[in-house]
Image 1 (cartoon, rainbow over the protein chains, first blue to last red):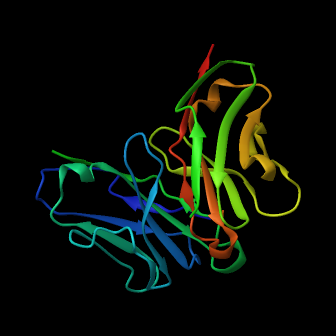
Image 2: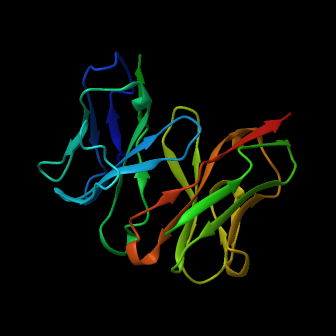
Amino acid sequence: EAGVAQSPRYKIIEKRQSVAFWCNPISGHATLYWYQQILGQGPKLLIQFQNNGVVDDSQLPKDRFSAERLKGVDSTLKIQPAKLEDSAVYLCASSRAGSSSYEQYFGPGTRLTVT
Amino acid sequence: AQSVTQLGSHVSVSEGALVLLRCNYSSSVPPYLFWYVQYPNQGLQLLLKYTTGATLVKGINGFEAEFKKSETSFHLTKPSAHMSDAAEYFCAVSPYSSASKIIFGSGTRLSIRP
């Protein structure tokens, strides 16, 4: 089966600009996650979707970050306006619903550099 | 609240030597425990997981980990290191009551000396 797809792989923007990332999860996976991984740290959950509904967005900086999963399949994460501290790798992951929900499959990530 | 502590941000071993990466967790409820590996410019890949049952779990690429409840530890080992094992390793915890919520440690970079 195809893995989690993400694009773009790399993005360089200036501070105060906006940027969007796209993720297509594994087919049939109901749950989708966006993580932020700052250099030297472990991934931190930004938002979790179950189908097209938000389960957890408690760590999403809502003044500048937004995410949607309109049809319960692919998802976009947007940052507007970007700050220097947003430089990180943004990872998308997906999992099945139910008893196997803990097993998450990760995409390759988008490396964002804000200058 | 759950948390994970990985001892040592960088571990270096010789090829063929034992690999030991340390992980301690805190959890108010019985946890699920995981080790993930991340190769350069790639996403995370699940190495192994503990949910219930046998406390010694075997994963891919010859790695294994043992859940020790009394020590709140879940250390990762491999008897003989290979050059291809060089990567970043993340220990993670998830409360089984909210199985899809995973909290990651800060990672340990494993280097292999020829």
